[in-house]
Image 1 (cartoon, rainbow over the protein chains, first blue to last red):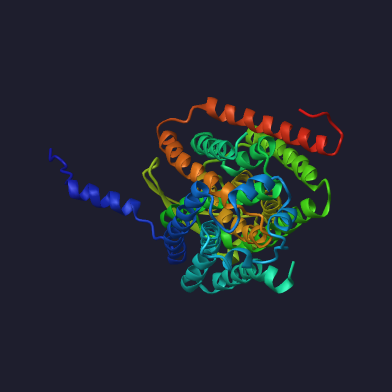
Image 2 (image 1 turned 90 degrees about the vertical axis):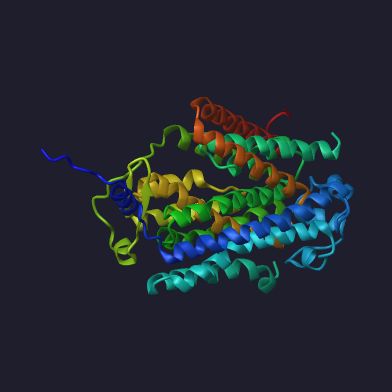
Length: 151
Length: 292
């Protein structure tokens, strides 16, 4: 009786075939952009943020924050800085302060899905181009709503 | 208590949440927001802002890996998030309006969150998950959108292909989930996964992974609402996110080796305790219960 010989490379190639999954380009692009920007956002949030927590020097004095962190947001800003906050100028106008830089890191993280969607849009088929396009418009509305509507 | 003790307590609490959450199979936000509201002196606005950043960061860290493996799928995400993102923004706006327009707004939020936590508790207790749901019929919209996907499943040693259905039934559920996420500063994976798995028929791994992707978009959109109202403080966000980021890495390594059920029950007890504390504190704020 002839013995059936199985070559290791044949087994490997069958295994490779079984594992072969074609990842959709729009999913891959979405994931890749998200991966890179998340690292950038985390670094920008953590490094100045830790410096601020340790030194206490920033746009908002640490002592004042601690004294008033129990107040609702609107009352907090009126009491600590004497301002009403509508929009992003409260941290974008003070990028030399560590606490504001840390919030810029949050901004990068919060804009990451939008940029990933832009990347996915390029690779999507026509139906999904429309759906992702709507998502992008909705996301842009979330970002610009306070500036356009003022509240 | 001195300020740095609060900051350290926050760091160690989120570190602990990060460790137990992957083992128990829950998201970090669902523990962070209610526990911080129950035990810390921070305003509910800043807590919800930090909760959103935390849930978003955790999801951003894991979603790319799943997307590149074929588990998280934009074909499922796009039609449902078109609806949920608007409700997530609306939830954030209404949530901040409640605390800032009413003198006892934070009490309403605490009671609301406590009630939501009871629902979460019941979902974890009773909902059954189906590893590979069988789909009898694909609805016309899912068919038209060609919602499908595939991934290599090591436990089966083969590529698993799947489709989903019931898109129209899932949309109202995702609208509600988005609203709750924005209003209470939660990730809401506890609600996304059952809807994706049991209503739409996505395999469990796909449901869990796509839920992460949904959280990145819903929570990021709501984050902009909180940021625009100044409801974000670096002093609260940084230790919280740092703690959960480190904790989640430890937790994920432990979860690969063993997932003792006792941890899941412990987390559920903590969740129930936080729910009771939040409702009690909320009622106390309204003058309807004695102080704890």
